[in-house]
Structures are given as structure tokens and as C-alpha cells.
Image (cartoon, rainbow, N blue to C red):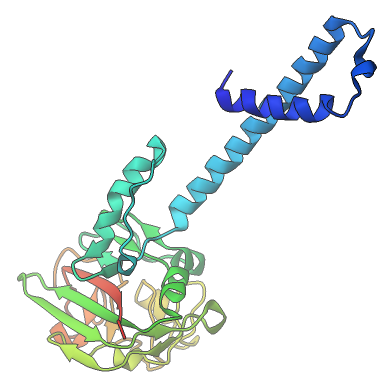
Length: 276
């Protein structure tokens, strides 16, 4: 028997038999005692296996939902179950130099970003490729401390530009993860996110842009769509295009970089805690 089960059986049996006086067992056939112990062993084994199943289920849930902040300088050197070693090996893909935590990546269209509210809240995708980290993770990460946002964009000619915001903050789910703060803008991409400041996040099944706009469905994605009839000055969660030229404001769009009719080849969004 597994050593852990033997230990658990010993403790459990000791508790049961320890309640009896020595004289209580006089005259009790050995077969009956052994049968009782076998019954206790079976119960302990069942409880152990049930607990193990629950533990594995919980760990799988954590695997789907927990994310590591690069700013925390986490070093994973504890023993890891074989089932999770592959997952742990993927974590560096989330991080970039300078303690940045990547929260979104688009690069080849391998992931569907036209998803519902629950999926955008929870997060989805493959952290080795395209993914969205999750609105709840993002909110919980940045709510207590000041963070900056860096957006990296690439066009189909291979040109890379950046947009940074030094005080990025969103609201809770109760506030529809509203884009509450951006701070000062810097860098080379142009400021195409400020038009979305103060706007709640919208998805195809929870669109806060208004029935007349229906921005999430029109643009086949999810974003902090603004209240204008055009919906966007930027949209990095739209439908991926293999070519640059698209219909107006479709695809991965950042107006100040390439205008309305251009979909970007790739993009990344990342956050970093601002040290005081």
C-alpha cells in the first residue's frame, strides 16, 4: 500500500481503537478485528482517492486561471508534479525583459478572439502563441499599485512601433472593467487608445456601446469601444487578417499608426508595476 495511505490508516485506526478500553477487546475473535480493520482500510483508501481527485481537479482549475506576474520576480524551484512541468515551462513566454507581463498577443490568427464576456473575463488562448490573459486577472493585478501599459505593434512591412501609458487602470467587473486611467502617453505609435478612455469593455453578448452601434459584433471582437458611430480609434482584439488591406476599421487596428483600412501583422500588450 502507498506509504501515505498506511500512515493515514494508522492514524485513523488509532483514533478508533484508542477510544476502547483494553478489556473491551477481550473475547473478540481475531477474524472480526481483522475484518473491521479491512473495512477501515477501504474507507480510508476511498477518502484518500476522493481527496486526490479533488486536489487534481483544483490544480487543473488553477492551471487554467492562475497567472504569474513578471514584476514579482517569481522563481519556481519547488518540486512540481510531472503533469504540471510542461505548464511551468511555458511561463517565461509571458514575460519580457524589464519585468513586463504580457497580457495580450496576436500574431497569426490561430486563436478566435470573437468571444463572449465570460471568456474575456477568464482569459483564453495559448500563452506560447495568441492569448488574452483575462480581464479579472488584469483588474486584480493593477488595482492596488500603479502600472504602466506598453503596446507593441508591427505592420506587414516589419515596422515596429510602441505606445506607452504611464498610469493604466481599469475598473472591476461591477463597472464592466471600464478603462478608467491611462496617464501620459509616450513613444512612436501615436495615441489611439485615449479615445476609449472612460468606456466599459464590450463583448458580443455584453455590448455597452449601445444598440445603435453594436460595436463588438460589427468589428467582430471585444474592446473598450467608444460611443461614437465609428466605435474605435484602436481595436487589437478584432478578426485577424493575413493581409494588410481590410474594410474600414476591421482587423487589428491602431488608427494613428496605419489608419482605418490597415490590419496589423502582430501586436502585444504588456503591463509593468511602476516602482515608487
